[in-house]
Length: 242
Image 1 (cartoon, rainbow, N blue to C red):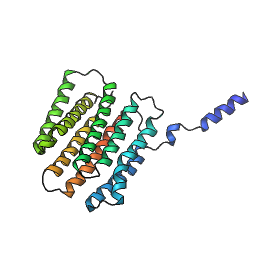
Image 2 (cartoon, rainbow, N blue to C red):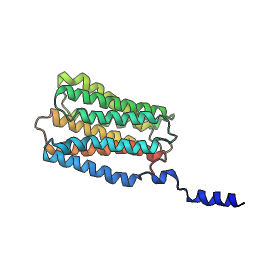
Image 3 (cartoon, one colour):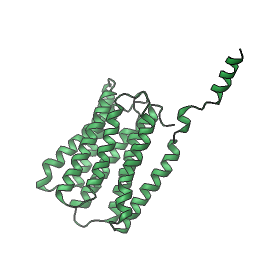
Image 4 (cartoon, one colour):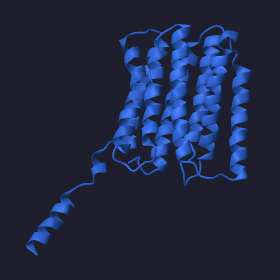
């Protein structure tokens, strides 16, 4: 009996493993500080050490936090979620450099990130009703119309950008179809919508004539919030946020 009492006292002293992990609210403070630093460097319009440090840290910090939450968790297709973060990080790095080649390489990396997100959503797909399909298609059409109206795409880049845009639309539709509370929730669907708006702002800034520092700041802010909503929304709905 003494042995059993000692065992019971010992087990009461053991804290759950998750208690040692960083909470979402605490991570968001760190994440917000990194994003604020990146936005501040964009405002200064100087490609200095802080700029080259803070931009890759946005997705790197998100990736480390997500890995800590899902590493030992029973989450289906978690490898694809990590791949999406890694390709997004690579896209950020490539887009820090100027030139058409680096722009296309960065866009290609982001396309692979969205393919990974799509596969993740597909493996969590639950049969949808007609209303959900209609909502997904309508959401897609509204955003597509808005983007195509606002962004003037150069002829030599049309094929690449339209292919990339198609991947974004697929991600948008399947995230919306998976937006039931019982599945992945609404935050990932809202996040990819905000991601598309962020990309539209990039198009306006690059192809619209005079480049605006305020638009560049809005790009980084909306992009960072979008990625956080996509990934943390998935964790939240799968009970892995705390």
